[in-house]
View: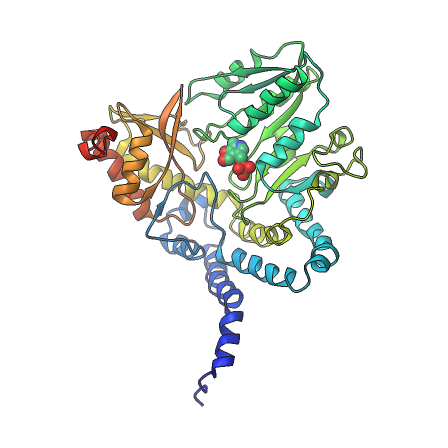
Length: 438
Ligand SMILES: Cc1ncc(COP(=O)(O)O)c(C=O)c1O
């Protein structure tokens, strides 16, 4: 029997209910099938299976008229995460205060347990915050430091975090020392550059796991062991490494680990996580006053007022999406995409790769420069002529474009980038791209 057509009211009701249902079904089922079919195929083999990855491309509702190759900034959410966020926002708005504090707040514990399990940590060690910045600032302001105490960080660490240490320098008289190195660097070179800055007065070491400038990997474990042997606390900025590199928190040996969940976990914008080693929790002051500031419980670090609980709860859906795929498969695909756009440029006399090539040091982020070409003008040229989005990086040691495809990126998108960069490496920018003629 034919289904009778919907009346206007039924049609509206169905349309209103549709986003969650349709997004959930169309995104989830093909993925489940793809994962079943993939079975135990080795990640490096699966990385070349375009049918498998086409299902992941479809799981994101991104605008394909833009070739989005700057996922190092903020990543899009899969449709099923967006659907969950939307469902939660509707629920919150049925009775906001009651929903936020009485109904949904307790459910955040399930997300905390999920994040803890993924990291190999205890839920009491996990604070769910807004981003890496908040997570890092909690540590940077929450440690007792006196005038003359030294903090060692690097010129490759994130500018906002360097600003924070500079502010503590002005307010509290601490000393901030910067290690530097020329990328691409070996782990030994970074270890030597950082440890050379450590003195008897060093109290804190603040380093990145993967840098935002070039995706350079740091020898976190070796540096943490070196620091701990001298009574130094270790803060790691993991904005780019969580849900991107395979690790359990215990392997890193650090004391504090901060990350944004709206990057590689694909959780909604405005979500982040701070892990604090259990023994360090009592003495870490909350950034926002808490009833028990010396509790050995990272929940004390979350008293930031009424906030986006819907986004925080939707982390659970992002975590399920992430764990079903798994880091090894994701990383293998990211490395394949990187190889795909970089292969035509390898060995070109005008091309400089600022990121290590060795797969042992590589990730989905890579920064490439073209001799004599201003990265800002190049990024603008790629955007205007090909709608390719990249991130120009200009510091003393690096003048390039940071390229970050993601699992939703297509081969066509990265191929287009490779072709364009090769054309500029061969012939330079067309005259119209030069700022003087615009
Ligand atoms: C290394 C690093 N640390 C910290 C941050 C700050 O992240 P958020 O803006 O999510 O707080 C970023 C942002 O890109 C980053 O790359």
